[in-house]
Length: 277
Image 1 (cartoon, one colour):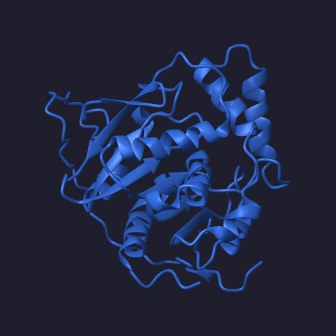
Image 2 (cartoon, helix red, strand yellow):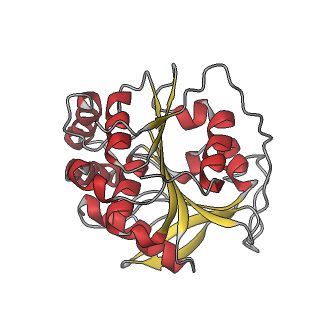
């Protein structure tokens, strides 16, 4: 483990944040449920032989932020307050993975790297050379691969509830969950294919030392799926990475602690002195 990992302990520190109901960019007429995510129309873009459904939030002149969601997650289910907080300072993009939600459902089995290629291609399809990226759970593993294979398209990254492999001793609970979804005949086809992809992911550990993009790693100390030990290992493998454990938080730490995490991520993204290899 590299000793240069910078650890930020947030014990009793409350970073004030006000939720902003950011307007959507699409000209479509939204519904009025009071949920920022559901009230923002879905837009579509063709990427890698599928059509990705996405939503965008915030000021279109702000810096772009791609949020990559986790395993079995749909963008319809993402906490609107978390998105609203990010949308105060960024032009936020949120999308469904292939086979899931508003994205093309009729897809063949695919390797994990396809999800990485989809995220990378989406950045270009939305008209950007690079974006800030915030990945949670499986989304953080996709983000790790972006940092390794497509670093030129990532401005800075935040990895939340992350691991470098689903085959570690620490991720046994996560791996069992994935295997159960594969074995269950009633599993949604999108979740089934996503589960196969997760199990096909190769460990990133040997390649993380090549990353030279400023990276923040966030984890909950009581996370049973991607335990804090694996998150610390990821941070230790990335040059100049910062590591922030949230005491008592579990796998849903970005939702549990959003009023602390969003200002922390913003501070990290906007600090030009963060990367110190």
